[in-house]
View (tube, rainbow, N blue to C red):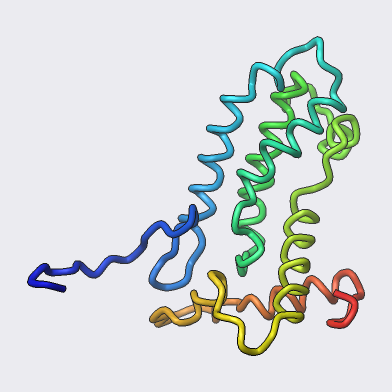
Length: 184
């Protein structure tokens, strides 16, 4: 371009998300976890204060932490191992917020109930289905959006099972909740 050589790269950051050449999201998930911990450090004065009730901490967590942790997740064709990584990071934050360790042997369900935070997997499913509803309602002449543009990248696959598409993830979500496309 104008005598300047443009390098071919494997990944780049676009609107806060990391887009990889092969369409993988592992790097984006790692980035989201790091950003979540950065937000955690900024809000730890409130989240770790023992004088603040757990329910109020949970509300602050849902307003500050979750958006940073799940930014762009509506377009992810996510695998179970990647969901597990996000859930581990989230539970570490919630346990720390409540002042519990794993040695206290308190179940995650009990801690989530005390704080008032739904499981991350449910939140991911909700955001994906909300985005699916927007995609289904848009007009045919609407431009291609960020998550859909990933399919335009050169995605050569190697050995192993085929990559699960976003459509397949949406179908799995709708099947698990017993929904149809019209309801979603």
